[in-house]
Length: 188
Ligand code: SAM
Image (cartoon, rainbow, N blue to C red; front, top):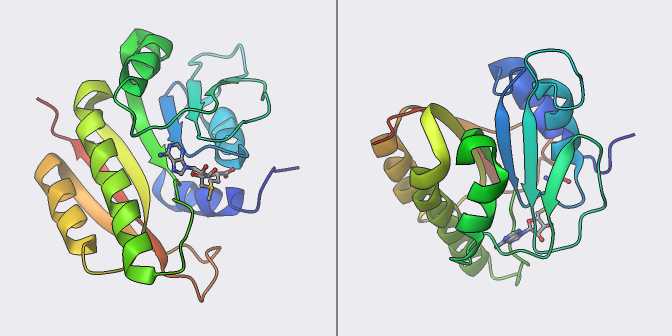
């Protein structure tokens, strides 16, 4: 009943590393078609009246079909400067405990170019985290391996106490995708 198989990657990561907890506010970047948001809604308790109740906000360039327990900003570019204010206005108190990014630019087939585009998206998100991520917060972001991965990792290490690289079993073996899980945001 998940909208996309990608759900199993987040389930696997969360089962192992407890990224999502009841009551957390989550920003899900590149959320379409909505499978990660489905997982997040369950794990943060966004639907239940039970306390603590979490919150899920998904953003994507594409349209996302409504999902109970989640709020979506469809047809919205995370990299667009005006998006920050829209996100802040929708998050409870303007802040998130966790930023998820499964974003992927349209692949050109030129590996190095696709890699760089995705790294830029992640770096942009890291800039945005300054305004919306709570101290001690978490960022989980997908990247494609390549020459600039180390640069992103180093930037994450400057801003988070704990940064690790994850390659979920559920990721296809032939794909160059991995995730950085950055925890304990140092904040400002
Ligand atoms: N995690 C999603 C799920 O489980 O349903 C799948 C995400 S899919 C692999 C990647 C998404 O990133 C695409 O829907 C794409 O439109 C989105 N995306 C790429 N660049 C983006 C940007 N600049 N802003 C917002 N979304 C973006």
